[in-house]
Length: 174
Image 1 (cartoon, rainbow, N blue to C red):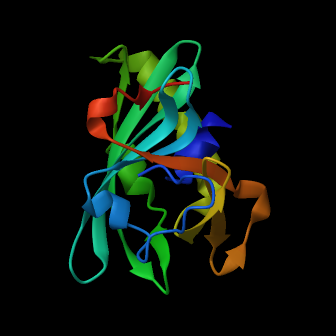
Image 2: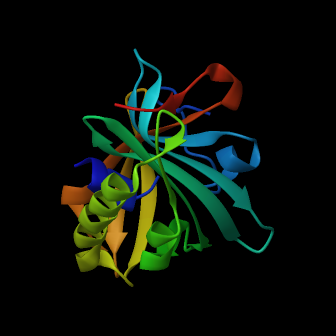
């Protein structure tokens, strides 16, 4: 599940609050996307820091949990664009193979890194090269992201998300 969350990316919406006009308006305001939030612990399975361009393209730094025993994080960069109101990108294996794996902020031992990357690439294989989009909808005190793979809505992949401020102390974790 952790790897799936990381593979599927990712101002908190208030109950009944309308969604922003543009899906990445919160990112333009300096917010970080928190996917699968734990509001008690202030952790996110995946955190996405977007840099949004005027033409609807974006660059993103994604940091997410890929293992919990011990907690291992992957940080990688990707890019995409807003299409018909949805946030879209192509799932590229190179983003994951060039990403940085860490445990407690330190590099992994080579054997552990190799094993984690092999598991990650195996999980990624069915989605490699496919277009992934999400559209948010309000859900209680957060959002549900409807996931779309190659134009097909995949309700089984939907994710909870919120937008958080960098100064509020949120961190990757589960």
